[in-house]
Image (cartoon, rainbow, N blue to C red; front, side, top):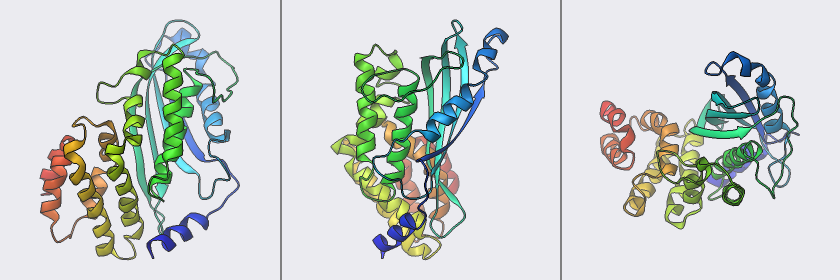
Length: 291
């Protein structure tokens, strides 16, 4: 039943489209007025690139991935060199529902790139560009997370592509933001953890979790069992995982509120929230509030 349900959902919405439906918003308030005019077309250019470029190998089956990029420009050293902070989010439709479930929430605070007003965007899988490679990196991460929710480890080929981009950055003279594995968020560390065998149970648990979300309107108690199965998998792995795991932080930043809500009425609700405090201490106050 589990596999039939998701197969019907995934293949019943085939459309002729690329993979992403990305909304791009730009904030230039931190820049001097002189530089703002050079960025008039930036949002539309990024949006066109994300939505019209083919990132998936094969025909994309299912709805486009609903996602957004909020770009906050922080500085400009001249008319073509910029720094920005970016918030990337994505969501997908819940089976048998008009509602959506959040897939990803990432705050990437160090995007340094070159952009010339009116320039064309060209994809390259064999070279590094601070602007285009950043977009390609997140396109692959978004697709990977989406596929992981439909099949165990289904997103691995796209996480591997994202890691290839990071490795190109190492040899391409990229800024430190591509090389770092420290701090609360790191592009490099995110994809390394996604592909690390230590995190295999966590990623396999994604499938259980999203099956629970998809099945909730059909049988809430059975759905809760799958959500709990995911939590137990993460708990069983926690001793061998980095306490500053970027992957776990990324997942729970997007999902902690949904987990609290979906587990209401579960027979050991309190016990699961106590367990969640241990594996997701960043949101301990929210779990305490629910308890």
